[in-house]
Image (cartoon, rainbow, N blue to C red):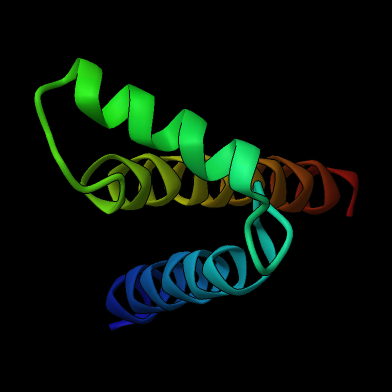
Length: 86
């Protein structure tokens, strides 16, 4: 039972970290400047897409996922370090 609770806590922690990264990790000011929008459009056209959101959204989700994984790994290492000190 304790193993299940630990696993559920870790899953909830990761989901919470991912949601926090979605909320607070941004690569652009709002509203996006025209120069940056044109860059996203040129990248999308390079992939043969007509809408820059087809490139922007997956890139942002990947960045947010990477941030959540790095913070999760840091928290787990700090927790292990704390537990071994006790």
